[in-house]
Length: 98
Image 1 (cartoon, rainbow, N blue to C red):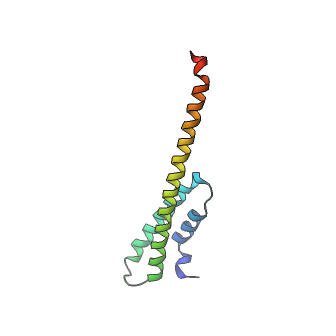
Image 2: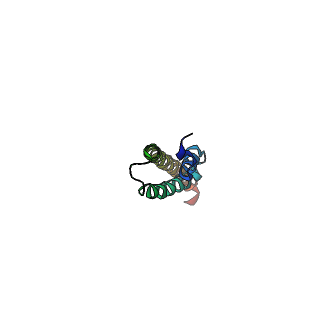
Image 3: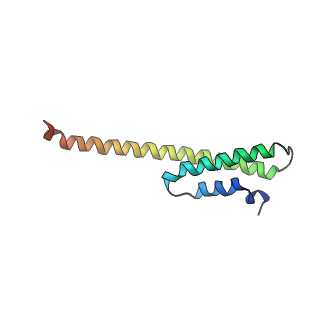
């Protein structure tokens, strides 16, 4: 176990990566990003130290960006599906409205 695995940012990052509910994913990612930003500020006080943790943070941020893109794609697909369903329902009730 690496030292950084005991850090709060790492727990929040793992929670975001393991989140299965798309509704909760955005909040989990935001929580992880916030804690990572806090930790990066702390690490600025120790330049040259914690190279492993800095690399892990870079990797985590890259993975969080991937999750965000995937979440945006899924949200767009869901929006499109809902719009198609709404259009289909309007076609069904259109004759009744005339």
